[in-house]
Amino acid sequence: MLPAHKDPFFGLHTRLEELIEDHESGLKKLHALIAEPKRAVDVFPALFRRPIGPEVLGMATGESLAHLNCLITRGLAVREPDADGIDWYRAA
Image (cartoon, rainbow, N blue to C red):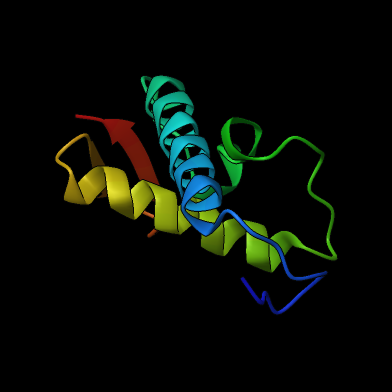
């Protein structure tokens, strides 16, 4: 495998399986967290192992939204905007 970053490596299929397992684990944590409604910026602890600072806030929010949208597509979450137009996500 010739990745865009770091050195070439063998074991692409093993690495893809690891990435999928990590993604699914994050989705499970996220689903549990939104038992109570949360905004996209409130779910960072379910997806990231470190605090999210201003230098990566946009990327982290985008990734959180992608995970939340995945749960919505699977029928496991819903998005509900409030009177101020803020989107809240909760488990379905």
